[in-house]
Image 1 (spheres, chains in turn yellow, green):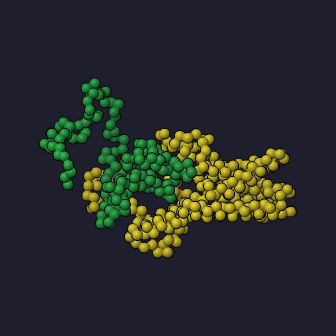
Image 2: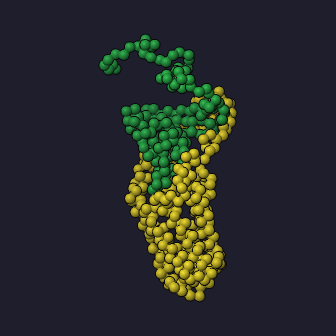
Image 3: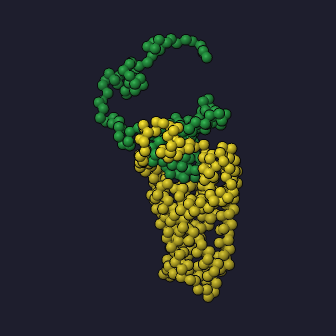
Length: 283
Length: 160
């Protein structure tokens, strides 16, 4: 199962051209949905107005070279390692889901565009990565769904409680789960189940990529932009009007607040975690 | 009007939901981010503002005492054990940076244990004073403050 390209057997029933057209339509739906979402929510407008407002409070100018370096840092940290999540479980689950999704989608596209023609022999690595991606996605996604989702964890809702915010995760998990089931039943030769799970896989994938306007899919593009803007506010000194808080041992701070040694000691110790030592599930 | 959440900063972690004493910070079912479901019932205790790990919550104070254009932001840092405030007036004349320890005793010590206190007597239940009033208000052994005890009288009309 793990070394067979499921799309090459599918090419006997559906032409490779149709499969490729479907992939292109899905890409267009994502792009179009994101643009529509941005227009509907006016997020781009809000973003630019917000950054103009922050610039008024800036204490220094950030050069374009520095902005480029901040963009690289945003990609390296917030995008590639999901560092914005302070909850370690959520961060790990998100990494599995994100990289699983990337592997799954990339290998799907490569196999459909490169290895569905007559006589095409798919390199073993591609279906292996396809299945690995789907499995990683399922692992991270189901972990999130049953244990980490904030409605369940902090608000005490039951795991089967559905809201519109769940459109993305449900369609994502359905796509990966049905894809794996389709591949399994195709490999063991059960025609009816093979067809059923293929139809469900395509249905879930269409909901996933077509539902961008209504789901949180587009957040994966918005969050890096927000993270970049946050770094810029730190660099230009506006810091969203938050107080500047250097280390307590900083001599300038000790001069400004001479009672720090009295309340915190001459070399203030790390007092450790207070409310943050407990997870937020006291509903 | 009280607390609101910057949706671009919130990641829906649930800390504010957990800590709100009025149980009015909840998760939006469409965005899965936090929001204040009942600003009328918010008493601006700032618990959610301080608990948010991303500083995604701000307070829009009432206009009669916090005019539009002001900014009051707080950063509670547990690793350093301090809480820092920044208060900017709308004219821009004032930009205060304040710093205070979160607690002057180490974590987990000197927590009042109400279960160890004696039960209120019938006299205490019948009286109009709340638990440990007037001691906790006066910080001395005097009786509750009244106009008469402070040599004041009520005058009708408005005097500014």
